[in-house]
Amino acid sequence: MEMADGIVINKADGDNIDKAKMAQRQLKNALHLYPVPESGWIPEVLTYSGFYDIGIDEVWDMVHRYVDFVKLNGYFDRKRKEQAKFWMFESINEQLRNGFYRDPEIAKLLSDLEKEVLCDRKSSFVAAKEALDRYYQRKKIKKISLIMYNGTTFFT
Image (cartoon, rainbow, N blue to C red; front, side, top):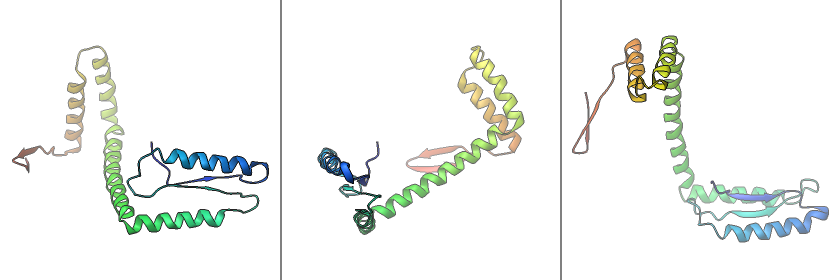
């Protein structure tokens, strides 16, 4: 579960003001039960009324305080780098999956291999290797083997 960096209780107007304030107190108390987030920021709980336009300045002030805080302590840049790394690998994986599964010959082969696996004529690992070998052969992709020796990676 991801913790919110800030919580805003909307509709804090009219007959709801007391309920919104009570919810604000309860949420503030509940947030103290959680450990301090990785960013070091303690989430704030605010109330807001869109109808009466009450509290919007406080909400924006909180957002700006948060951004300033995480930029100053380096958390913002660390998270951006983590996200960039994640999306790089996600993009590679998506392209590889799309190329593999959209290949008409591979789609036919997978259908046949699935039947063999379900009938216990081939193990799932053998079937997967067979499908990948065929794909590499069709695409003339040289498989690269990695060998680790004393912490050094060698390609063969």
